[in-house]
Image (cartoon, rainbow, N blue to C red; front, side, top):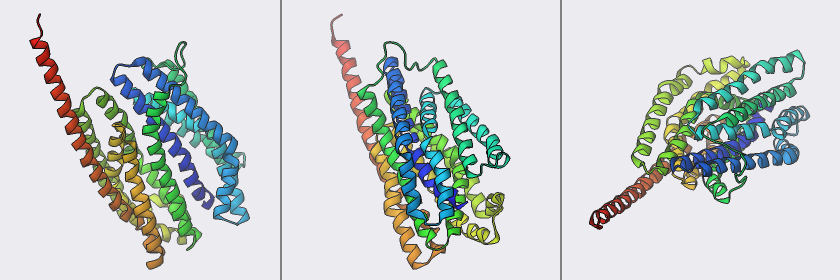
Length: 416
C-alpha cells in the first residue's frame, strides 16, 4: 500500500503533461472552430498528436532512470523499493497510451463530443477493473499485475479514442494536403497547456514534499494520505469534468466574440460545482469518513490516522470550486499563466509553508490542515485575477462596440 502511495505523485506528473497538452489542444481546436477555420482546426489537431507522441517517446527512453532516482529519494527499504520500482517502472515507461489517448479525448471534447470522451474513459476503467484481480491474484503477478492492468486499460481507451477521431465529422486529422506541424497552433497549445502542466505538476511536487514530511512521523501517515488522495480524486471527477468542459466552451465563444456567453458559462459551472462539493463531497468526508476509508479494510492504527486526516484535509473542498473553475475560465481566454498563478500561489505560498510550520509547531495532527491554509491564498489570488480579467473584457467590449458603430455609420454615409 505504501508503494502505491509513493507512486501517486509521479503518476500525477504524467497526468499533468497529458492534461496540459490535452486542454491546450482542446482550446486551440475549439477557438478555431468558433472562428469557422476548419482547416486550421484540423492542423492544430495534427500538431497536438505529434506533441503527444513525442512526450510518449521521452517517457519510453528516460522513464526508467527517472523512476529509479525517484524511489531512491524516498526509501532505502529494499522490499518497499522493489515493489515501487516494479509498479512505477511499468506505469511510467509505457505511459504513452495514457498520454496519446488522453490528448485525443480532449481533442474530441474540443469539438463538443463529450460523450465520446466519456466512452473512452469508461472502456479504460472497465478493462482495468476486470484485469486487476485476474493478473494480480489469478496469475499471481502482484503489483506488476496491477501495473499491467492499468497499461492494458489505457491501451484499450487509446484505441477507442483513435477510432472515434478517425470517424469524427467535426475534425479531420492526418489527411492528405494538411500540414502535420503548425508553429502557430503549437504556440496556442503551449500557451494554454504549459500553465496547466505547471499547475498540475506543482500539485505532484507538493504531494511529494508533503509525503516527505509525513514519512518523518510514520509510514502509516503516508499510506493514509495516499488513500485520501485516491478517494478525493474520485469525488473530484465531476468538478474536473466541469472545468475541462468550461475551457473549450469559453474558447469557442471568445473566438465568436460572445463574451456574454463566456460569463454565463462560468457562473453556471461555479454554481453547479459548489452545489456538488458542498452538498455531497464535503459532508461525506466530514460526517462519515469511515464510509470512505472502510472499503480499504485498514488496520486499527491506520484507521485512526485516516479518521483524523480525512475530515481535516477535506476542508479544501470549500475553496476548490472557485480555484478550479476560475483557472479553467482564464485558460479559455488564453490567460494560461494567470491560471497557473492561482495554483502556484496555493502550493508555494500556502500548502508547503503551512505543512512545514504546522509539522514543527503542532506535529502530525496539524499537517493535515495545510491544504485549508493553502486554499485561502489560492482563493485570494483567483479573485484578484478574475476582477482583472473582467475589467479587460469590459474594455474589449467597449472597443468592439465603437468599431461596430463606426462601421455602421460609414456604411450609411457611403454613396449607393
